[in-house]
Image 1: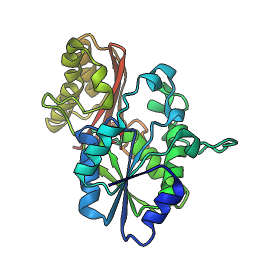
Image 2 (image 1 turned 135 degrees about the vertical axis):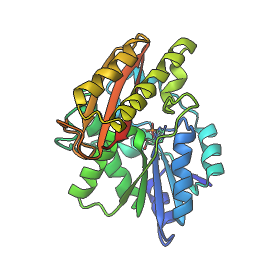
Image 3 (image 1 turned 45 degrees about the horizontal axis):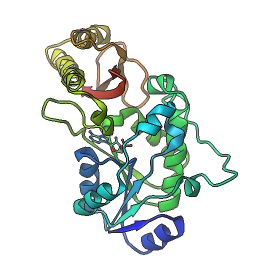
Image 4 (image 1 turned 180 degrees about the vertical axis):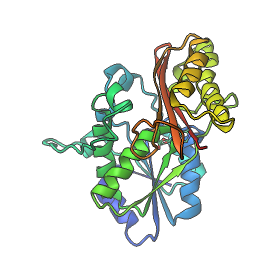
Length: 276
Ligand code: AMP
C-alpha cells in the first residue's frame, strides 16, 4: 500500500486501474471503517482509502482538537484490510489559499444533524464532492451509521451528476450493541456502560414495530424512556423517511429511527431501520 498526499499522484495511480473503489474516512480506524475497506477490496480492482480530518465539518472547535489521530496505525490497518492507496492530503491541499466554494444540499441536510450541527453537512458535501472529483471512483463506500450523511451524499451525487455509485454497508457494533465510533474512546467506563442504552432503545422500538406498533410518537417515547433510565437526555429521537429525513405519520413502509445524545461530553448518534 502506498501513502499519497497530492491529487496528481492519486490521479496517476487511478488512471487505467479498472474499477476504483473509494472509502472516505477521518481515520482512527475501527471495525466499521475496516468493513468498508474489505467490501471495496472484494468488489474493486483498486482500493483508495481517503484519510482526512475535515475541519469544515466540525461545528465545535473542541471536537476537532480532541479528534483521535494516528496515521501510522491507520495505515497498517488499511493495508491489512486490502487498501492499495492511502490518500491522506494536508489541509492546504484540500483547501488552498483562496478556496471559496461550498456545496449546500437543501431539505435533507436542514433537519436533525443539520439543526444540531450548523454547517456540518455543507462541510461534508463540499469535501465529498472534492474527494469524488479528485479520485474519480466508480464506487464510494459509506456506513449506515451516518444515515443522514448517506442521504445528503446521495442527493448531492444525483443532483450534480457525479458518476459514482454510493454503496452503503451495515453498522458494525460492539458486543453490547454500541455502534462503533472513533469518539467512543472518549467515554469513561460508566458512560460506556450507559451508552449501550442507545442501541437497546432502538432494538426495543424495532421489536414494538414487529408486534404491530405503528405510531412514531409511541416508538420515540419508548426509546426516550430507555435513555432517561440511564441518565441520558437525547438531543432528538426521530422517526423519518430514510431518503428525505422527513418525519412519517405512521410506519407504513421502510422507515428509519435515528437518534443523537450526549453521553457525558461525548456526542453519539445511532439509527435502525424498521418496516411493518
Ligand atoms: P468517519 O471516519 O467517522 O468519518 O467514518 C468514515 C465512514 O465509516 C463513514 O461512512 C461512516 O458512516 C463509516 N462508519 C463509521 N462508524 C461505522 C460503524 N460502526 N459501522 C459501519 N460504518 C461506520
